[in-house]
Length: 460
Ligand code: PLI
Image 1 (cartoon, rainbow, N blue to C red):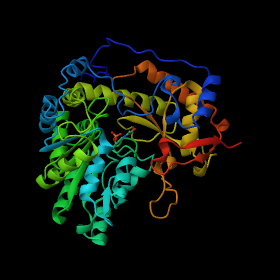
Image 2 (cartoon, protein in one colour):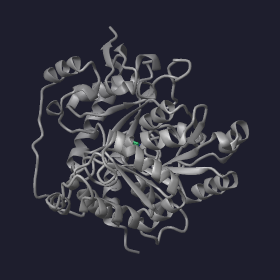
Image 3 (tube, protein in one colour):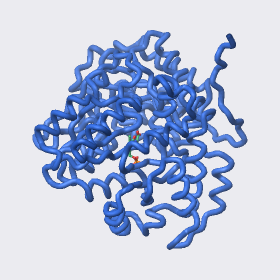
Image 4 (cartoon, helix red, strand yellow):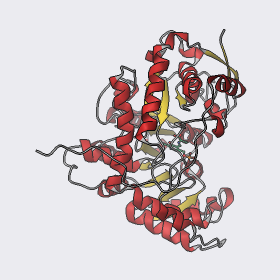
């Protein structure tokens, strides 16, 4: 039988952007100036940027051409209708509200659906999503399977929901106090883990029984669909586009950060099927984002998104995108580096607890490790552990997640296999010198989403 060929980029490069090399001495100074927070580095101080996959994709020549078709009318821009048609065609939702990015959609939807005292179950928290739920008076409740909190579990669908956890919440709080179940594809904080269609169907059935809506955080839905195609029984012959549509059809509304899957540098939307929710959202968007036919976006941004959505569900694109992430993950696994298994779809996540067993969680091991990798090579990664988890909204105590991770996030269509090799070399070197890494103390803590702006100092 013919062996499956290696993944390769289904495109060639026609424009390049220089990268900047710095010395270790310079980087140590930059880190100090940035309070040991990689979010506070300037991009020119970074060599290979694995901070995030958000808004960092390389657009295609088709998307750049689409930018030139920007119809910058205040109201009724043609580009809005193209974007709306793409969302309806590929995702199937009826009504579309454009927003400047994902959290704009989360804000509007949370304010409309959540009342004080409500509980919002979800397959693991995401930082901005949970904050908007809390600001609207709700409390997030984790219903992801236990294995998602275990970096060593090798289940294929670690983004799945535990139906018993959901059922218990419904019994305890009553369906009337659960405005919706929040389902993310894929689950970012678990390490980019997909959920299966079989599981989503079970969630749908339980929600239908109790009259509860499902809101889909579809930020990385094409990546999730690709994993279903690869790993879920009965889906090997279906296209990514078909699977994406099947996922969306099982849900009632969606918030989207188009800055990830959909291959644009800025943008998002809220999509809903319910007329009443749509009317409220259309009313709110003009207060917080912009008119309902642009929602904080330029016409050209919406046109690029219409093209990006179609490209994002292309099977060759998604195979290469996830293939590159898996390439990096396998390389690190082979070198014996502790990473989250199963390898996710948008990045490789280092297990900082195992990497730095001599640093307690109070001394921010993942934050320290991200700083150490930057100092070694100029590769910028980010913390996804106790700093990102923030504080309990009622008690003010620090949340202590089981997962204390450093995310090596791979931007779409940006870096080459050789860049991934250099990243792996740096992580391997830092691992060999791990005993030299010291913990940090937090010296400045902002009130909201502290990981973005917190500052640290080394513990001497
Ligand atoms: O960054 P926004 O506001 O466009 O989107 C917020 C958002 C919502 N859901 C999920 C699953 C995300 O990953 C997400 C943003 N993620 C960022 C910025 C990241 O670095 O992962």
